[in-house]
Amino acid sequence: MAKVTCAFSGITFAVEHFPANFHSREACHPTFLLSASSLIKYYSIWQEGKLTETESYLLFLATLKGTGLVDWRVPAKRTEQTASLVANYMSTLFDISTKIVGIKHPSFSVPNIAITHDTRTLDNIKYWLRTWNESYTDFILGLKNDELRSKIARREAALEKLIKSPQIPPAKYAQLLAAWASEAGAFPESITTLEDGSTIKLTDYWQQIIVRCYKTESILGVPEKDIRELLEHCEDNIDGGSIFSHHLFATLEEGISRLKSFFGIDSFTSFSAENPGFRILDISPNSTGQAANIEAVNLAIMVDAAPTVLPLRANFASDFLYLKAKTKWDLAQKYITSTSLAASAATANKESTKL
Image (cartoon, rainbow, N blue to C red; front, top):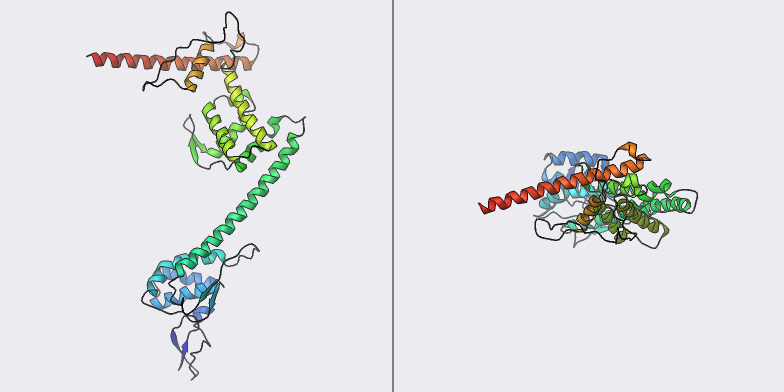
């Protein structure tokens, strides 16, 4: 019975039917001849704990060889730490090997490693695997960036064509502008909760805001702070020198202007004896004693400009004018009610303090 020293693993095993011994790397253990699919099958068996220490060692080295990235100058050498290395890095090895094997893209480059007298104990395996994984990650990110750049370029070409066509109203390309902004500005994919309690991806919500900025009726219900937050993100993350960013920033600014105009916040612009250019508003500090913020001031202005009686559709020339007055009325009543409740609570608190 012949004795064979494996050219890759360094283990010695017996072979029948020939009397010669092989110790000069003339042969290898049959494990190294298994296909990639067979190795995956035995990996599942390893995960179930059904392979011996030697079998696990052979599977580990065969998977390394299967990557095609290892130069075996000498056989590997088993030490007291080998079993621990195999147990710790088997899953990582299979994960990265299944990713990189078969990639033939010209820009995909993964460094080769060499099994030498200095590295044959596999003590550096964690660094090899980390390097391969980093190369793979860089390659995938590069592909994504190239794809994103191409996608943005296609959107910009379509947008530029529409923007330079004066007969096409901006609202017609609102969706395309919103999609471009989402990609160019890397809108977050995180989930946000709206004022009505519903949830939505922030990127989807911000795209909706951009589209809604084109019509006064549509922008109603969008808090001004949300539009300003979106505008600030775009100014920080999108180059302001392009025709597309100019339209985007102008759209958001116009949305804020439409929102204010609808609620009468910008309506006090003509001066007269009746309208000297200012209003005295009853705005109290909040519960912490801090002065009211801009939103509170705007709300007080809106309440001051709201109808004093419930609007009726018959008294207005169009649905839009009626909707405008009715919305002001509803918000004013809500504000008055909440203010009254807060005042009552404050009075009750004072009375209880006296007691």
